[in-house]
Image (cartoon, rainbow, N blue to C red):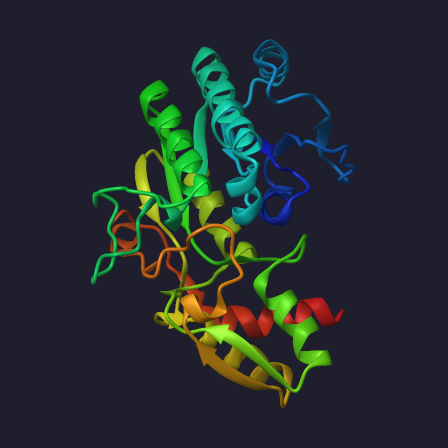
Length: 293
């Protein structure tokens, strides 16, 4: 039976992966916080300590390491670059070096933020990377730690992530919409959301594959702005809150620059035999039902 080791086990994506895998795989994981998940051996260790990470992985001997743990608060990364570098670069480097020693494949979760967002077309996996914020720069360094250390790896770039655990755009907009008659949302940043529940299924498929390399993965359903996304969130949730479109410059609250174009070309997934994710509209509908429970 395949042994899988998950970093970020209690996080938005890590917990979904553990749920998908629990009946068919031997699972273990590590988080920066103590986690208690039924049927999963969890380890509360310092992932920035290479020797401890190596000894842990030598003991477990996983076939696959799914590396989801990261510093993902984009504005915090901008104001605390050492924090971003530690979690997105140093931790990834430690995991890859340890994976190389034990011969495990690595699935690394990256981001659309490795691109500058200035292109007028979709970004494919071979396009030039040129991040415009600290988050994107450190995630790109994490990509390089993976590709320069290992031969057996998947680097999966995603965008606009939402899931049950932690904060996300949908939860924020629902909370704002409850208390305001109108909300202002940027309409000049374009991309596609990614539901961690759907992404987890894709990563499970990659566990058993040897079609290594870079992949882009978001839900299907077309490309939208944050304004469009908010309109659909409120429509499906039954809110009457008015949504007003504004430019990123008019909104002006972010500490870190954001790419205007986060549209990712995903045809490589299908060409490699992986099943596309469902539409984001369907994902949103399922997610809203989940958070109502």
